[in-house]
Image (cartoon, rainbow, N blue to C red; front, side):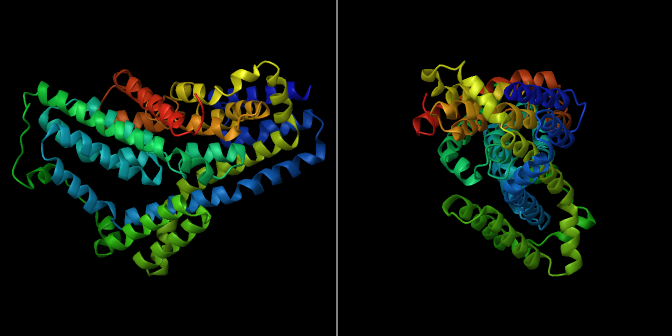
Length: 437
């Protein structure tokens, strides 16, 4: 009976989120609460909610401080010299232009925000593509590929996967670094391949260049007066060192990522904006995005707390075990990795990571397969390489509208490449021992 209530609870959650009958925050809180009351949990339900929120609090805090930190260093102009150098490097050589676009998107995606990545990358590189008559599908294709393989510990899918299984982002992310590097290498390869195709199509087989600096005439973004007031070009290397330090701390030490970003944000504010009023303004400027995701995480804490505390998740997993051959369980992570990218076209991140993945993970765990492997396999494509083509994410529509490309054309062009990237990273996970084939 408890397993049936759990299945109906998750089914209702998926329906309400995917049909947009309820917001993810409302659905993650209300539906499991109703399920717990039907299951007879009564006054124990609030305890489960508090327990789930308590477990996810450090992760939500990390996300808030990470987003705000990257917002502050961006406001200070840390990316400006990098963008200028990339533009000088690419000239009008199609290979360099496409690879340079990918590198720019890679850097812009450091804060884990797809919309921001697209807003920085596409308007910056679009004039070059227009001037040379290059295929704009390649512009958004390489941007999507670069952002997709650049999953980081504070990005939405990683945070959701870690919070759903109550594991640390460090344990989840670090083993995936070799696979991510393979994905990034594939991005560079595709940039080279597409660039060669464009050279041939445009009759530029040998490539050509223009006078140094002339490309800046139609690229360089004009800063508003407000943006100029925020820029701190003399602190470029200080901000770069801060970013390197916080990333190094997350990857190479056991220091809590929350603490690392708290300290990094504090230093970034004090160094770039000593004035208290300006510090408050910078925090307020990035609070909306940070707090929205944090709210979803706290709502997810209520959901996971109820599903775990009430016993519904365990009951569902025990029931599912009867239908999964023990010999098959070890193959589940690999299969999940292979199909993870297309799943982005069917499930939004909240419904997948909080509804589907935990049941699969706990089921195979009962058969001797670590649950974390299912989470790591999911990261290979579910709303990572999949998010820039999924109709379930607003960022997809932003990407195509910025370049003036039809969504269907973008999907036909990019989906096979993004899926291939997902498959390559999944096989890399097998090679590097993250999970078996």
